[in-house]
Image (cartoon, rainbow, N blue to C red; front, side, top):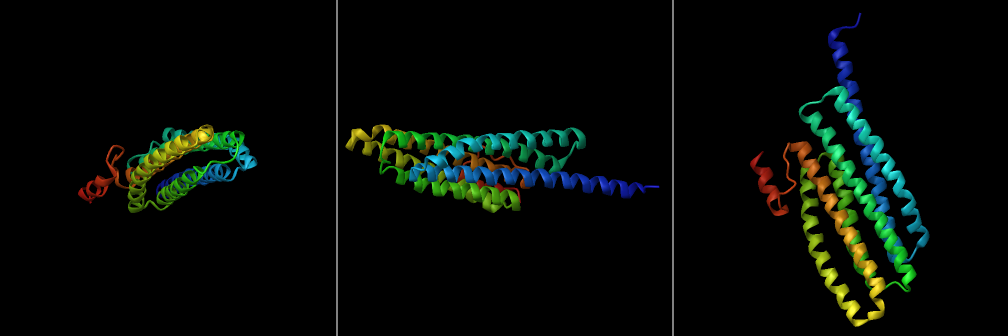
Length: 240
């Protein structure tokens, strides 16, 4: 005969295992997306058409992972009807999946523009802007995923701060690119591809910030989607 407490404990352990599984799979998807973004930047800054094509082909795997994991989230919600922190975990993962998929889309756009730059001729000196901001954005994605893995609110706040800094740097880079085009009109076509690549990187940074916000929601139960980065620490301190 099965003891009621033992049965309840078994169900609880099984549920915890399901939560751990979808979290692990989401982080694996995040690792794939991070590589996609990094490869797209490398393709754009080195003129590697083969790597750009690899990124384009890899986008379908990202999409497949999103659909599969999100389906598991929906099944857990229907079957387990979680509450409190467990519910926040499922919702945060589901939201994170959407942001990761969108990052994958932006990586695909960067790869497309990398191919466009190659067709336009010699890589413009403007690719230095792409390389520099790309390095910062990839670090943001990595830190946001690490914060999710460790449920680290402090690191999540740092990602939000970095997003603000990247946005400012993006604006400066655009002004520099306009100067390049004015100095050499022949570079306009290739520099425009760099501009669009930078726009995609800026969007990846926004989605990394979203991931950080999901961590704060998960750990603290606070919706900080519209809270300025400078106000995050004070807002979190009020709820300690």
